[in-house]
Image (cartoon, rainbow, N blue to C red):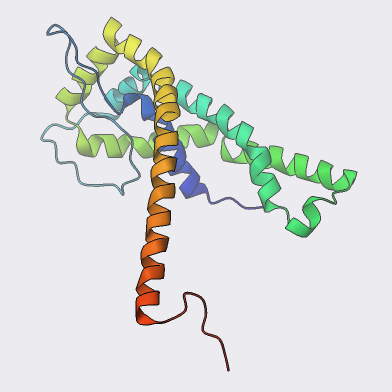
Length: 208
């Protein structure tokens, strides 16, 4: 089984930066952090008059605990691997796997996991992120963000972000699912009404 690496890299980038996408209000003594979310944009020419150095970007990554975030995503990805493997098995074979088949899938799962998310891949992700940050942030922006995320308020924000995001998803997902269901039903009814008004069947035309 072959998984597209570029797409996975962008997924990892997005997951790794979730805890830095929004900054809570801070006291006047604390610098306001800029938006520093990683995005899957192609490299752009730096718009800042004084772009940060590579070393400063890596200092920001350290302040954001970016490697720890990537490690956390790696563990989450590992938990989803069995479902990915199951989905790749032909349906007609899924319920009739031999012990040899299961062993093969288990070994393949581990190999894919190791290949996609080893330390070299993690380092490559951060390398790809550096020019993106440089193209959007000035040296002053980065220094301000570092100062914030290394402050007690910033460190507390990073610590609590995963829990806040989990709780937000718990609160949001049921509402979104209910809205999607309602919209789908409304769309279905409108399409049905449209064709009934024209006197046409909603399904494929019946051949005479």
